[in-house]
Amino acid sequence: MGEYGRVVGESSGLGGRGGGSGDITSQVMNAIGDAVDAVVSQPPEILVGMAVVGLVLLLIFFRR
Image (tube, rainbow, N blue to C red; front, side, top):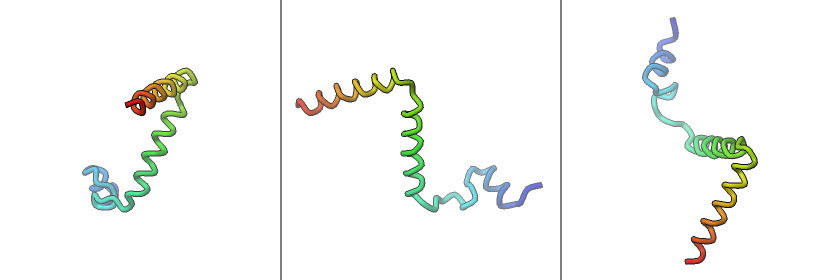
């Protein structure tokens, strides 16, 4: 049998802090880190394609 606070937190999805986030900066940094990890884990062909598409979109945007 688990501790009351831990079981209630896990079952309700609120976590151990009663539903509130203690540090928004750490959440933002984690989101950025996850995005970087997702991009870096792509094969080189996908990275080159993403760079080309980004460059084309950038040129279209600045041309106007």
